[in-house]
Length: 264
Picture 1: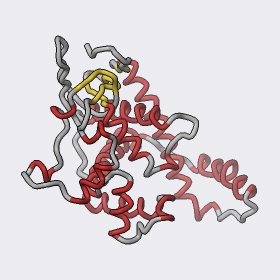
Picture 2: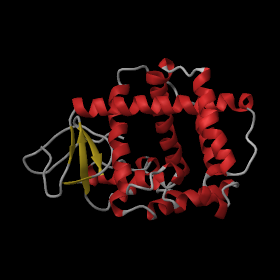
Picture 3: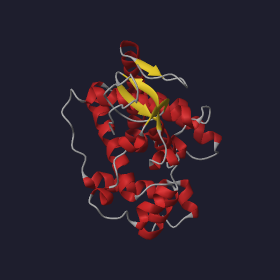
């Protein structure tokens, strides 16, 4: 989501993106109304209920704040709050050693850097079928769904509403996520090769000890070879991505805003 920076007073800057800060902005001038409102129709009951679970800054009731400026693109407070809520849908993907807010800001800065680089590559279409599969997998995997009726459509919508999302908003986030993943695969995965020795080493030094710890019988190597290769591919891509993002940060301009400091 890209938004122009509007600051009353002498300083005015244009550009955009996502999440947190400390310079006062008018969110009303930047937040896009729900489609139903844009069409002159009242917000749906589902949208209104979901909005009720959002923080005031996300609803547009108060001014927004700039958290960071990434090569001229903005990370806003409202985006950080949304990212934190979305992360709670993937609790096993978070780092328990770091505050949730810090992780959200880091992800938003990294995503901004990636999206800036995406402009130079042909976009890979994300199909509705892929988004539906991602949503279906999420409904099955979420630990919180063990206490909710996520299997039914009504129960799933109710679960999302209590989390502060409509289903349409969730699908938009999943589509954005897939777009970034496709780009990362285009950029890095094709150059990564995993050989048989790497697979065997992982099986012997990582998988077998883990199964032994659980006092369980390990599956034969041949039956898990493909899965091990996928894990190793993801590890290699992740390492390359981290190095690349560090280079982008070092060569670009990422500025974290301090409270009371006006954006340049």
